Amino acid sequence: MASRILKQGQGGVFQEYCWRPAGQAEPLASAPSHALQQNAGAAERLAELERQMEARLRDAYREGEAAGRDRWRADYESALERLSASVRELAALKPRLRREAERDLVQLSLAIARRILRRELTVDPAAVAGVVRAALDRLAGVEVYRLRLNPADVAPVAEQVRQGVEVVPDPALPRGSAVFETARGKLDASVETQLEEIERGFADRDT
Image (cartoon, rainbow, N blue to C red; front, top):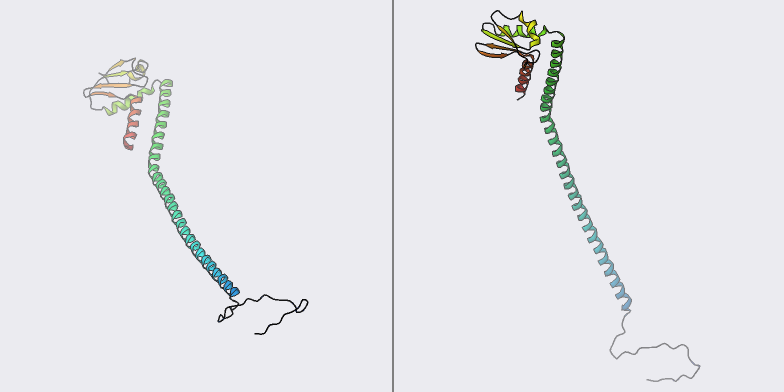
């Protein structure tokens, strides 16, 4: 192979040339192509990763939504149960409140009756005569031996008593009292005793 020697100043720009061993083909411009393949693979992996993340997020959202629905349903059922219990309690409470209201009304009525009767007995001493007459009507046909009264009530009542009945003043008895001693035992026809019987009657009805 012939060669030529160039003197200084001759020729142009020299470019480095890489000599290859004999038989070795010249490589193609593969470096840029390989880089592109690597970039494409990375982009594909990134896209796949994004798809997986989106799928997981959707699953998590659905799970969270389902859990939220379950939690809401549990809270709703719990609140509904509490409401039902309150309604049942109120339903059971209504009759009791009515009974208590009736009982309070009876107590109030009896208290008013006591006050009126006591005032009536104080203002009109003859009022106890009506109590005695009512008791004697109940004792019709029963032998009465004795009638015990408060000393202040003896005079107004004496005329109402049957003949043969002893009227005995008893300071231990309050005004309006009338205790009969009969062949069958004692009968307390006192105003206070009658009011207590009325009160017991209402109490027995409530039980």
